[in-house]
Length: 304
Image: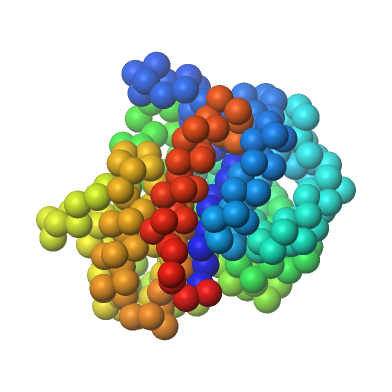
């Protein structure tokens, strides 16, 4: 069972400009890597100490990809550095899983290609990056493709807005899924598309794609669509890794574990993912440590 934590190497995924009205630091992309080695090491050590087993690494523009070095920000890791860190992670008993978010809402990390979505050049860049990352990770068992929040509402404060809809969204998802599967790796996505498009989701989403619905509250009332999506995905026999966070409330992960163990069949409940949605920097240490402690407590006693 996945007992995972999502960590950001690059935090350039959220917005293409500062958004003062959000009242949140770190949301805007920066041309340099926001990452502290000491915080990274502390997270890994805490994961081992607390019995977690899977680290999902959002790479973004934090790597000097050989296929597209033009994407990398200042101080991005070399591919040799990444390989060394992955070897260290495995020696610690953790399973590293790559993540690149290709949602047009969260792809500012792609640099110039974020403004060429759905073009032949864009598709080639996506394929190149997926192929290279799979090689760097020595063919991981999973590859998280993101694909969340691609709506007008979520991009209302952005300078550049791109929204794929209808057949185009599905076409582009299948381009990514096909490339991942071509290398013998299982694709993994956020599931929030189902909240507003349940009919097309259940008609077209392959069951080979691992689903992570996310809900960060503690109340699982029947009127909360994002919370009840876990039950709808189970009704259609999708494998799931439910995702929680201390973003809104500290009780998110415990409530999520309890609810999902009651409503998802064990053979389709492949684990849980916790995250904090903050960069991997010392200024956010307390929130990272809290998130890990909460996950450890909620997941303690679950099958390995």
